[in-house]
Image (cartoon, rainbow, N blue to C red):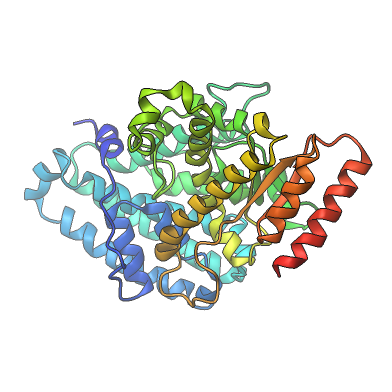
Length: 421
């Protein structure tokens, strides 16, 4: 049995709606068992968890411990482990705890407002639990800790994908970080050494230091790898159609069965619902471009969602460039922007149901953490800026070459944005 293949081929199970959870720890367990490990980890990144984080993490670990013991303590379970029946569940528990730990050593904790003592206490609990679970796997398995090793290698592999197909010198910082993290992994103590190495790479990074000191706010102009950049303190992303398309070269799973972020659809399943679009793609080039952009952008919305919620939309915004080929046509541009915005709202209402389960409803569920990048190359730009801002949809600008262009668009943004308040 190839453990890595078993984990990779394991598909998340359908979630109940509404969620049937009874408390926050139980909700994290539920999401993890169903296969939504990143969503489970991000559920804890909420201001209402301040003062309760260590206790909640302790409750989560207690329940995970019961599951691990149920799987590993009886030697007759060898066959079940070896043939993959329990491998996905063990991998999901490992991954959920790893994602939580990375959240607590990254700068997300600062935006949420966790005191250092609280986030560090939660991190240490997780490290101790992972060491215990890995030791249990080694004691009961016949060949080391293949599940823990596979989970770690899959995380490093995902980091290494960035700019692997769409290469530009000097290459991806995240791919470099993956190599540095791997150098310091002790494969006889995989998970603890991985987290210690990752912590060092994150907290010694120049972007982390500058962000923590409040010297600068950083964003990224790409569609992949954002979760690690979020750990480093990046608070926004600007993605244009060209770079959104490039992400498909780096990560072909975007086409079919995307596994990067939870609850995000893949391109194939999205367009299979429209037979005419599949049969006559030449007649739907703009629609296909918009759909491909959506599929690559949804994961960005999801990654930044916790810090968007925690900051009341001051951080975590995704700037999306509208199709430049129709930039001078107000009607087409507005139609595209409105469709993407409403599609994002529909997607995020479902996502927020699980991310924000059990917290107060003062935050407007489903409101997209998105702004549209409007090309200022024609008079349509001013009209489009005014219209979007009047609807409470944020904008920023591109293809501006003069001060007068910028001033005109800024005035339109301010004056019509006030109408949405």
